[in-house]
Image 1: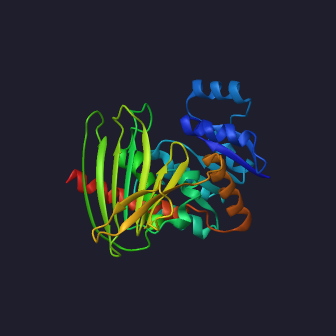
Image 2 (image 1 turned 45 degrees about the vertical axis):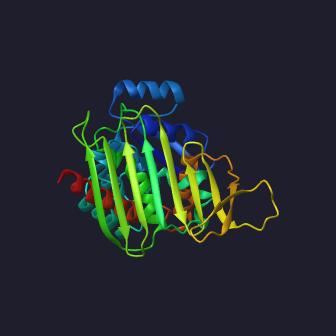
Image 3 (image 1 turned 120 degrees about the vertical axis):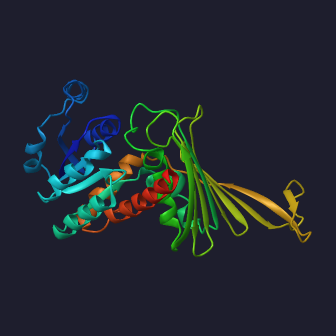
Length: 318
C-alpha cells in the first residue's frame, strides 16, 4: 500500500477521504484543512489524523489536493519539490504558466501527476469511448447555483469537464473557437456556450450553466449512421444506429433518407457496470505510480484542457 494524505477537506476532499479510508491500495495517514471547525467535523466523522501541512511530506508517498483552485499551484509545488506524487482536482491550476511549471517539476523529479477530471472515469464514457468517432459533439452541463466552486467561472468549474472529454476524443488541431457567456450572480460568467471547430471537420458545441433549476450532464456524439447519447448523471449511454431497412421486422422504427431509401432506427442500450468514478481515479493514480506510467488524465492533459478553457474565457470577456 502507498501512504497518502488529502489536502483540503471540503466537498470533494471529503469524498476522497471517505473512499481512501476503505482503500486496499492506499493507506490514508491523515489530512490537512485550514478551517478548524471543518477539521473537527472530519475527525469526528471519519476518525482520522489531522496534520499541519508542513509535516505531511515526511509521512506520505503521494497527496490528493482538493483545495480552491487559487492554491493548487502553491500546494502542488510544495509536495512535488519534496518528491511526492500529486493528484490535483480540476482545473490543474489558475494559469498556463503555473501548469507548465508543475509539469516541469514533475518531470524533473520523475513523479506522477494526475488531474481530477472525474468524467473520464464515468461508466457512461468508459463503456462507450472505443465506439466514438465524432463528427459533431453537443453537450449540456447544467446545475443550480453552487455554494462552492464560485471562485472560478462556469467554464473552469463545469465546462472544463466536457472540454477534456472532447480533447480526448478528437485527435485534430483546433481551427476556430467562438464563444459567448454572461455574468448573472458571480463576478465571472455563470452561463457559457462555446463552439470549437477542428481541422478534421469535427465540431463541438458546449453549453454550461450554474443557474439552472434542473441538473443535467449529457453529451451526444453524432457520427456516420449513428449517434451516441451519454448521461453522466445516471452513468448510462445508448447507441442509436440507422441502417438499411430489410423489411423483416414489421415493428421497426423507420424513416426515409433524402434519396428516398427506407432506413431502420435501432436503439442499443449499453450495459453499464456500477462503478464509483472517484474510486476509479484512485486506482488509476495508484497503478500509474506503481507502473511508472502516465495516468489517463496526466498533468499535460489537464494543462491542455485548461488552455482551451482560458481561450474560451478570453473570447467571452472580449
